[in-house]
Image (cartoon, rainbow, N blue to C red; front, side, top):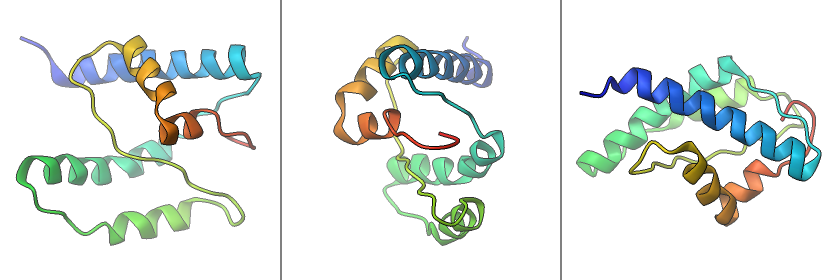
Length: 113
């Protein structure tokens, strides 16, 4: 039996490492992770997952307000929900690099990216 929380934490850690290495090695970009922002994203991601399961969209107003308050003036929040039917972080990164929107997020340049 798979411990979903442990598996999610392990995949996230590996994916963070792979994204940072890709950005550094292929693009010469630094990467920083905002754990507070990650925490803020959890309810929105749960709502998107619920929407996929039950087919009913929840309001995202609270999430959007929280992001507006968290992102400094003059900065831009880029993000999108996605899911994968496997736990292979290398395959996830490869898929993200192929997507137009996801590649744009991964290759974003700026301060505190």
